Amino acid sequence: MDHRQIELFLAIAERLNVSEAAEAKGITQPGLSKSMHRLQQEVGARLYHRRGRGVELTEAGRALYRHGKLIESQMAEAQAEMAGIASGALGHVRIGAGPSWLSRLLPDSIATIMARHPRIRFSVRGGFADQLIWQLRRGELDVVIGALPDNRIDPDLHFLRLTRDTLQVVARTGHPLLARSGRDLADYAGQRWLLPGRNELVRQRLAQAFRARGLPEPVVVVEVDSLSMILATLRLTDCLAMTTSQLLLQEEGWGIAAVDHDQLRFNREAGIVRSRHLEPSPALRLLTTELRRIAARRRDN
Image (cartoon, rainbow, N blue to C red; front, top):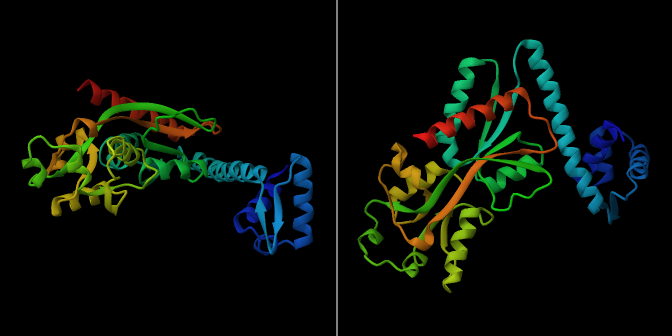
């Protein structure tokens, strides 16, 4: 199995059409088919089946696609790192960061590293953990910094806990629920919510809490992965959301108050997620060290 074969297979897997893949890679269709025949003999498994005018990946094909994307990404990163070393730089880190990390620990860490190593480059994407980890698995990110899943048994990912915090219900300071004493869980179920996508841990926990009491899932009027959007909308509406308790102590929590309920407080751990299969670059090791240092300092304070 060589890099060219992987490259050709990825073209087929992404288009699910041999003719289109051959055209995209500048090879004849018989030549592509012959290369794929050799590849399937080498791996000892069928990678795809023909379906009408296209193809459908087998389980082995889906596995090779996942690993092939990582190889492709690692090759690109290797080329970039070699060019960086040649120019005196330490590399480039592609970061996926959860909403709260974008405004707190991550900027502090990057600023410290930039002051010491001005040639390091960073690319940062914001979002919630589920979608970012999916991009990490595809090789589109080098690291994810955000909420850690409850189940961390994963053959492909390495998890490093940095912080613990509490998620709680929040609203604008003048929200009608704040004036209601003895709030019942049903009072929350009847509200409108600003929440991330269905696969995100905080939304799943909230839905489970309501279902356990025989209540319907929260009514999500805005599905959003931006903390600044959530806070701005909260201040202008009577919607509810879930954020960390730490946020209320920060400047960005101005105008926002906790609308507490014991059954809607969830402990959460957050930290770093990266691939088990790729050696971290010097730049990523620097970022990890700095994040650990700043997280430890925040805990001590």
